[in-house]
Length: 230
Image (cartoon, rainbow, N blue to C red):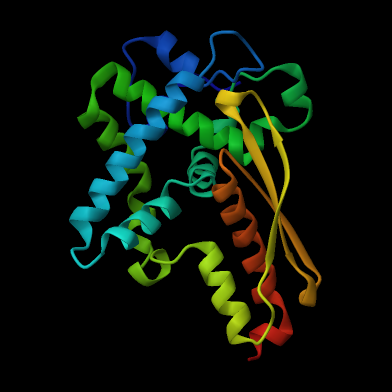
């Protein structure tokens, strides 16, 4: 496991309370003192920080557009991308079972760890420091994505793509719900029978899981010759 000082360097923040950092990277499979409470806190702070950044960045966004853009930026997929960039997987404390099944590189676990880190910074140093850390990691994404790309969610983009190419709409189905009541995980399926495409999404809400499945399906749809050539 990598030295946690390297993780501090990558997020741009040095903890005074080392135990807080250690807890942020500890999965519930490893110890009773894990990162779920910090994850809850970090999720709240992240939504506020990104919401404020979008509010200040583009005055033309409506409330609905701001909500959709924020949802695209704070979703599991985006957090996992950031987690992969800083190699957060190398710093995680996981139980033996999770380690054997590749849990360190699972998008949901990486995303949760990123939120826990944000929560830990907020817990120790308050909103301004947490905002600085979050924006430092999100700035490349904020500056590279256009309002047009961000203003529509994956389900909407998939629907428009299929309709524009005269294919039936996708079908979404709940596959399973796992976990305790306070930390449930939803797995959904997106089916496009006409193109023989089936993808799955997993998240902490059914809606978010459907978005994950739709995003995966959209990638496959755009690779099909009958779509790409039209």
